[in-house]
Image (cartoon, rainbow, N blue to C red):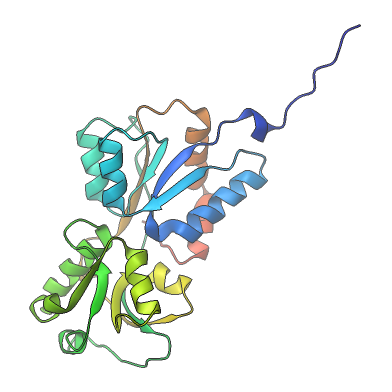
Length: 241
């Protein structure tokens, strides 16, 4: 008697890709992974942290299939080490930089009052020494002539979501985060938006790692940069790069 072999679902045949992604992508990347899974694929395993921390892990030999950075510099660092698969790097999304405060506050910040207002209390932001959101923030404050006044009041956080949490808890009256972070939390409001010209363009590049041997990783990368994938990020406020 010949036994018919039952075909396994696609998700059961695939090995889920491992994605290391910038902390600010939590809601949007999870939504994209859910959409991918609903299409019958194995849901990607995603680890979120500061781009700097993730890049250092990869340089140290941590395994992963895809990397999504919140800036070009950390992706450049991986490229310099020969860790990116040729032809797979592309800008995924863009973002804006904003000043936030607790939702109940009603501060109005203008370019003229930026330095004086932020110097009134602690300002939570990702570490400007390494983390993209912090580097963008420092660049903007320097360009607008407010860095010297604000720098003594900065509370450095390990990533942009940690900075957001400080303002949510009331531990800092102000924070500098991405617009998408502010939109993700009902506990904060946007008090001001930095002009795009005040800092380098905010771009999130994605690439496959050269040591990845999982075919599902390249398929998921293509999904993320497709029209459907980019529409998912747009729902959370991300911009086309």
